[in-house]
Image (cartoon, rainbow, N blue to C red; front, side, top):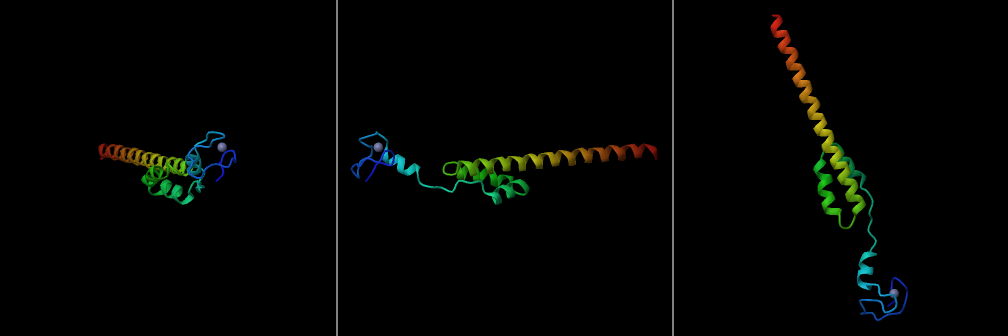
Length: 108
Ligand SMILES: [Zn+2]
């Protein structure tokens, strides 16, 4: 077989290239093509409905698909941020409504 780094003909059982010293086994396992792109559906689901999905997919993908994992995590965190902001707004609105009810209570 040939060294994937320098192309020297080396023993097929060799772990390290005799010419350039690269770890052939490691080199081969690293060059396995992986479709590492952000997954639009996972991102959308994380954003609108299931923020936890993005975080789960981050841990599933982080070894082999770091880009997809990072993007899923970001969308998951944005999804969580949106739901927190939404609950704060609802809380403030509920509080304001209660204040107004209390005011009207004193008028009657
Ligand atoms: Zn080599």
